[in-house]
Length: 112
Image (cartoon, rainbow, N blue to C red):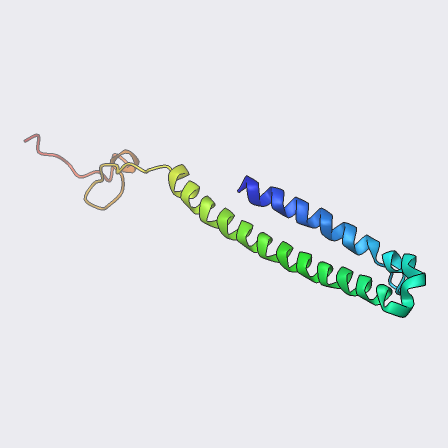
């Protein structure tokens, strides 16, 4: 569980860096390659950043689903262990515990 949490943090940090490296108007890291526009350097960098964004976002989603699945299955085991057991109490004929039966309603015993 801890390893998956660490992976989630790393992927989220990488995703943030990739998103921040992009410029919504087509700049970002690709803007530094202005001299290479004739050979397609800007387009390749933008494509790489976009593919990286989608890949990291998908990986983050899968890791979060795995983490939730592991966490859910782990808590059900703990719920069963933490549930206190209730001991059976002796009851009278009416099904009411013996301690709760008023004296005037208690059946008389013959002393046998």
